[in-house]
Amino acid sequence: MTQKQKPNVPFGYADLLEQRNDLLAALEYVQHALACWRDNEPILRVWRKNPNSEDAMTLTQVCSKIVTDKTAMCIRSRKDAPQQYDVKPMFTGNKHGWTLLDLFTASAINSVANAINDINRDKLNSLPPLRAAEICFSLLKG
Image 1 (cartoon, helix red, strand yellow):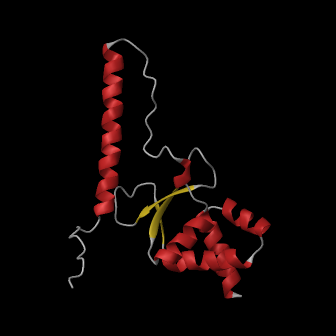
Image 2 (tube, rainbow, N blue to C red):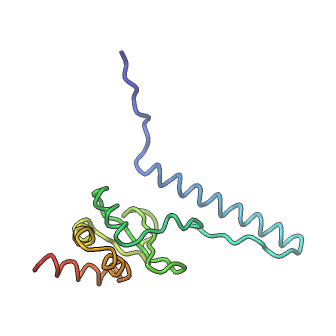
Image 3 (tube, rainbow, N blue to C red):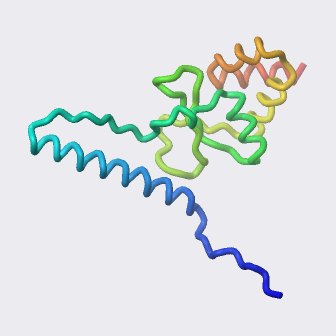
């Protein structure tokens, strides 16, 4: 009986597919903009790299994801949604504007967030990541 072998997929294949989809979306927008320019019409579409707000996560959600995945990730606060963060793997793309959140810090924030009630968890989510980490480490230390 032969077992099914896993396909030989290079490391980062999902990242390459995501980049390909982003490039295809950008190309579609540029084609639309050129067609509108050619026909002297206003550009009706707005192109965004991350149009879905489901991708945004709160700080405690990001920390629980990091703890379950057992890896560090880069986070960036969203400009259009306060207290929401974009998340990406550590060694992908441009690093400017992103903050590295490691497993140790995420574990500290996650353990404090699991121990407090919902009102205080909302307050913890409203803090910037550095300040939340300082508070969580001081609570765990004492």
